[in-house]
Image (cartoon, rainbow, N blue to C red):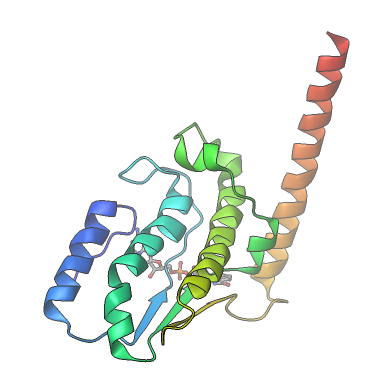
Length: 173
Ligand SMILES: NC(=O)c1ccc[n+]([C@@H]2O[C@H](COP(=O)([O-])OP(=O)(O)OC[C@H]3O[C@@H](n4cnc5c(N)ncnc54)[C@H](OP(=O)(O)O)[C@@H]3O)[C@@H](O)[C@H]2O)c1
């Protein structure tokens, strides 16, 4: 079955086919995650679209089948990079230009979305037999994690310098 998380139409198509052909779903692992520049078919930032939105829609569409299984589980792969994420609805939803250097911030933001989504889903599923988890895979001291940290530090410093320059420009006016 084909699934392109960068297309909400494809997600709907996949879920429809799955629900028609598979009578049972015990475990849904929302694993796909990328760091890239670009847009989804629907015009969202690619990381927000693939890493969060596609999984979000897929989970919602398959939720009833998970409930029927008795003891269903939803596992969403996040990352320790979620700590540096923030929710920026303007960039994510209003289809503004995302500069290429912002792609890493967009990844952190999407990983924060994964955590918040899991948290909210768990709350809403209280009392049902479905449980939800989000996690950082692997060793937090891995090279990947170090790269995440250094890139974030770089970006934070860059943002700080840009903001400072902006404030100084305003003061001068
Ligand atoms: N690797 C790490 O050290 C690390 C650390 C922290 C968090 N994570 C998280 O763990 C998860 C898995 O990471 P990974 O390193 O295993 O990633 P990966 O090797 O790059 O694999 C990413 C997977 O996502 C799929 N994918 C990408 N775009 C897709 C789309 N539009 N529709 C459907 N599937 C799509 C890819 O499918 P195709 O192969 O078909 O393209 C691939 O199977 C991600 O959520 C990542 O953020 C990983």
